Image 1 (tube, rainbow, N blue to C red):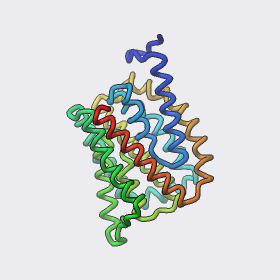
Image 2: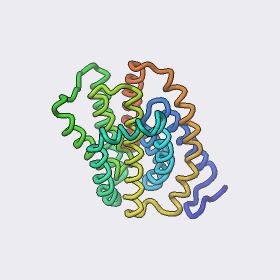
Image 3: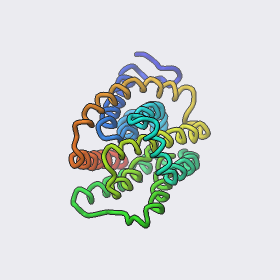
Image 4: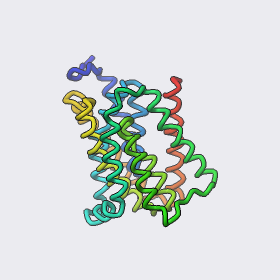
Length: 257
């Protein structure tokens, strides 16, 4: 068995982590989101939650850079200017909430994330209209950013509240994917900064995370091919179904099944 640095990870465990990351990258390439959710739920099934959280940091950062710039720098810059409120709230709240990770149990973290994801996606699939009034969108951006940042600092996943907002305002498929890339990229930088302070991100855990960049990028490139063939209605439906599957899996892990 091969040990990895001071983490004492065996070769089968490393291969399993690469497999989880490849699948996460594939889903992200196809739908534009869910890489951290897939990784935290997959990796935490055989690794400590803190190491699973550290492991997702660099692959998500690199893949989000690719996703953000897929339509060019000008489009990415436009998304930053359009959603600056959400981005500011995410960064501040993520750095702050990262410091309380040591005081929260793994099951509690997973349950706090899985429940709201599943509920929102189920309601949307059942056809219940959840739309944000145009006059309240600025407030909704702040709220989405705060909730996303608070979740992100302790779970490594800040996408669902952002997804809820973008789906609620009927964002076009390509715009939604780009906005998610920008939000996730900036959030990913905040996540790493927050956990450099908390100690979760260190030389050993970041070396493990660096190993997962390649399988994540391979999955992403293959996922792009799938995304380009999806029409808007199917894209939305698959997005919601993916959120339900991931949410239920997080709840399963929180319950210890």
